[in-house]
Length: 307
Length: 330
Image (tube, rainbow over all chains, first blue to last red; front, side, top):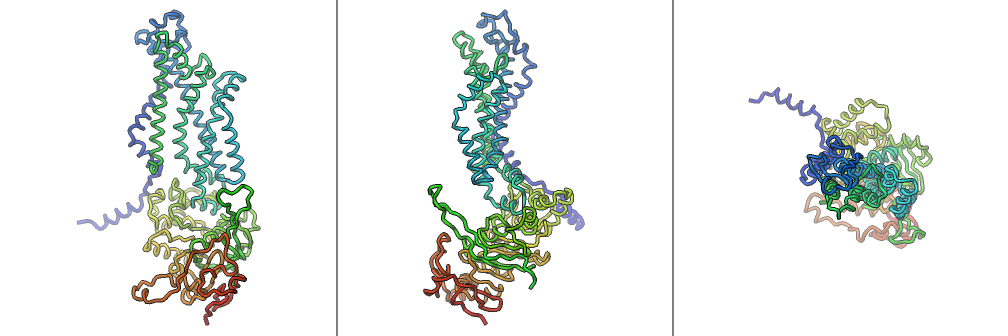
């Protein structure tokens, strides 16, 4: 027999307990973790980040320590080996390639992440503002973006690096300057569709200020697409930086990046020291693939309708 | 009669429409969404707005809440012109006038919890309210509109259409407004839910002494809830009068056609009755017909109808129609 009192108590309990809702973000997270390739990509990314952050502790040598005894004997003495402590071998100057790769990965990741962070913050706010205000302001803001885009940036960046000297800061400024342009366009396009939704109208009718509407109603709703684009922008930025470094204009010695290491390795290909190319290139490719897989997974998770 | 809470004086809303592919300097076409509309709303009264799609009902609502620019005429709220209000006054006015939207789900931000959505007007207008107090008032309001308060942390996509509309109503009511505008609040819901929501709106309106403008294209729903009805066609009022009079004894030929289009829930009576069917489509609001805008589809139109815009004439007690040949009620 069911006790009547228990039933009422149970009903009370059901009534009183607040149900935690599942937000669209949580739904997306579930979908993301169901995607095996994306999760694998994420794991690889975490491993690479750990490698970049903590690899220095495992390395037996400082990245800028030059082993003069190896000069000219690289091809047979600088071979990757566990015994000598040069896990990845040495580079042309007799420096430990493992420590160099750690350092290069760190710089490359940093460039990619800073680039896409600038893109996310500046590009999203700029695009959302232009799209939301609309009219002439929108016209002026977006034409400015068009004009900036039409400038050949590689050329400007090279000029900047030549004039102001080659430094990481200059590289960041250069990458930050171009990375947000596409993002602003994407954010604006999305804003145009969101701002005509009724919930935005409801907010306007209530008297919420335009700035709050952009931050509370527009940006969270375009964040899905922005995140996807940002993850795909990171590898793009890494490639961009690598290209600059490959030209010899990127980061300066003794600092290095994956692009610079690949460049150095490629120039030694004919000397029988292929590991100089192999290790940086492997890390470069794995990082890019991991980012692309994660980006793909995010797109599927955040935009279930588009599949 | 007391002072009207809202009066609309000769309101017109004109949109500029550029034809596709036009040069930037081409003069835009003028779309007359609302033209020369006047109405008064008494405190505590429910005014029903009916008309076909494209007759300017929603534009009128949006002009009153101020999301659409007014081209001509004036809107007075408690005798004060909205057009001449300062920014602060306008903000205070926004607090008193709230709106319930047509598409229940689209009117709720999918990234916010129900509690945050309902609290938004409160947080906007009374930012100093402590969080506990906000939550308490939101819970009370949820209960009032028939939602379990423990659903406060849920997201809009987890609710049905009717529930979403209740959330929209709760958001509109949280500041205890004086005037609520319902823009086709039930047309996206199925019939049984429609009845629930309409009854809820009517109860709340009685309880809180709200004035309400209720927009719908379904006459039977409007009849059920309104005290007075305004029938609109192509942005102009065709007939204004008490709900009963307009639905039982329509005096304007357009209203008569509208009423006859409401099906009778009895097949025999439905088949037996004779009804004037409106032919053709709504004329384009880009180039409305001269004189009476309804003349192109009117069964009793004559040549004079094309000359001047017909004035509103008394056709019964408190009932007026914009027609040169109306049926007169005694």
